[in-house]
Length: 470
Image 1 (cartoon, rainbow, N blue to C red):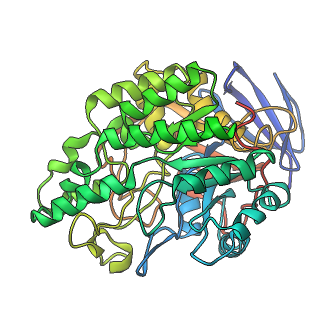
Image 2: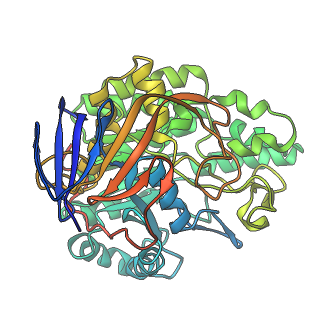
Image 3: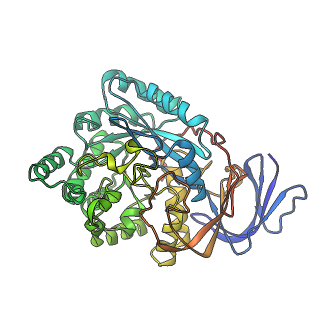
């Protein structure tokens, strides 16, 4: 790999902001300075542009089976290409254990699928659905030898994904001493199922009942409960896709007491609200994700949480299903569900995270540039054992770099994004700020809207401890 010189851009990290040059060699940052010279290097002019560390999205679901033949519509290839166009150069996906399967076998299966397809770097969280003695015995080796230091458990979806509180506690105790952290989908699944059953019995089947049967209180209750379990187990805990004020209050209260409780939110909770469920007919199915969209009061609370570090990360929970079955077939479409409880659950977003957060966060004065980089790159890399290889601009770090135009306005649309999904949550939204060029380990993969990368160039990232460096 040849040498690359980036000239005269505004270099922004979580703590720095200055104009300078970057020199890459052998995929890493070799030098940072002013008026750097490298006669044999490929030169890129970054005048007027921001030079940012490549984004790290720690919550995505590429080619993920959901049961009954239903699967997300983005492959590892299409999904990571879409991520790259959005300035994300590292993803952390999931290796979900099936009933009766070992966690290690689940990881091997996902590694085999990803290796020839991923065009950005990638890692995996382990999802545990069958927490038995044999599965628990494997977890230290996953942390210490396979580089999987985070384990997701569900408090929702009874009889499918949900595990009980004892399983959560046992998992925490098993991985805590080895640098592992447990990530929780925090909703009270059994109460929510009772609400779903009530709605269906009353003949209420339209998509809006997805939101009405998953109340904020049940997200708040589960978040409070699992933080208390983590406190007992004496391990850090991470709440995924937090959306409700009640859940945020539980995190804030715990952090005020010195508990290592962390949480992420997602762009759709910051920019969309529950009024989307009033769309006519089946249109509201586009917004069936879990947790559902909340009200404007929750949005305001989430932005405050991001500003004051009560929320540490913005990820996407990219879990795409097409709206129309013609695109990739019924089993990769929202139309696979005839009532709200059967609509495939998830929404797209991996390509638009940086642009949305820059426009609605930095441009609107809600967060500053350094905080923007912290939320999208540095904090996720630190939280999940990828720092300083990823998430920053420093000598010796991987040359994962985004050249970002802070002034270019453009329209978000499914007609121009690079995911397989046939709709966008943000269709027609005009944003200011656009990715111009993206480098993965020093190699140019996106240039002015043109794809320069290739399937299989992404590398698996073995991660160190999660939740220890914040």
